[in-house]
Amino acid sequence: MVPDKSREIIFYCAAGGRAQTALEQALDLGYETVYNLGGISDWPYEIEKE
Image (cartoon, rainbow, N blue to C red):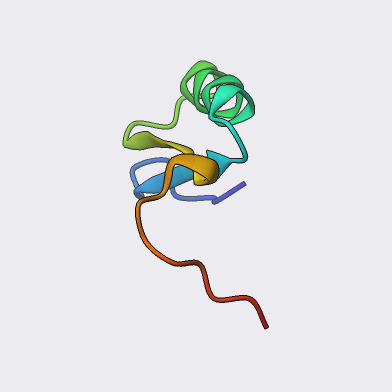
């Protein structure tokens, strides 16, 4: 994880559930500014794949 616990962290995964679990664990570890972007499958824009 990021050493600076006040730094913004954004979590996402395929459907949002694992991102929520990661967010909760980060909060438990003392991280202050964390967000769950949700599931990438709900992203309304085209996803570019390389």
